[in-house]
Image 1 (cartoon, helix red, strand yellow):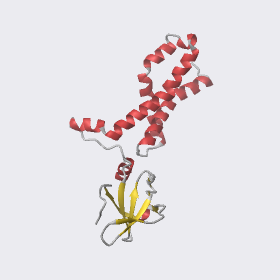
Image 2 (cartoon, one colour; image 1 turned 60 degrees about the horizontal axis):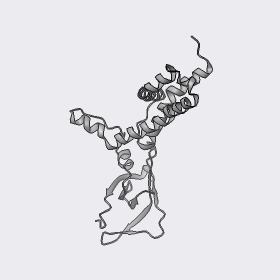
Image 3 (tube, helix red, strand yellow; image 1 turned 180 degrees about the horizontal axis):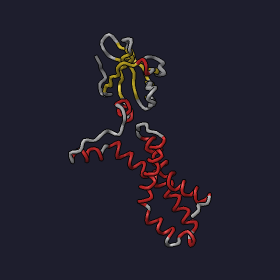
Image 4 (cartoon, one colour; image 1 turned 60 degrees about the vertical axis):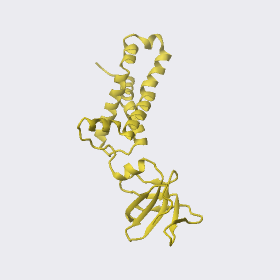
Length: 207
């Protein structure tokens, strides 16, 4: 049995692209652990097989019921849905399940001890995208008072955990935070951070 160039491309697209799309959606929505190229390749293949398993009835129609010969345009549309659209939907659904931790809660109720899929506390805290007043203590003992909101950013590169706060404040003698005029935010480099304290937005006065 020989495989033509077209068949090789078809099988590559069919068994790797869905998994790649699914994995890419997960990476956009969740912090993920770094893994090697070989394991990532296996992940693409596994996710693709799960995707195709859900569409096994469609593959039966395409190859066994000769749908490709009788309705080529509908077949092309169906293949596009299977290879590109379906992995996006599955990626969004699986990311939502992980964000809400439903699977982990269910397993813990059954008595299993689970490992959190998010690799670090930094990733877990900032992936929730909740607004906070932030008090950053630097290694030299100085402090940075700021606001972390939608326009702020926390680096997700393990080697560069820098933090951008969209607004900065100064501490008044009475303990309140006063906004710095004309602030454009502040960038705190990762190698200077010793401690980060998060305070809820409802707390207008801080000591």
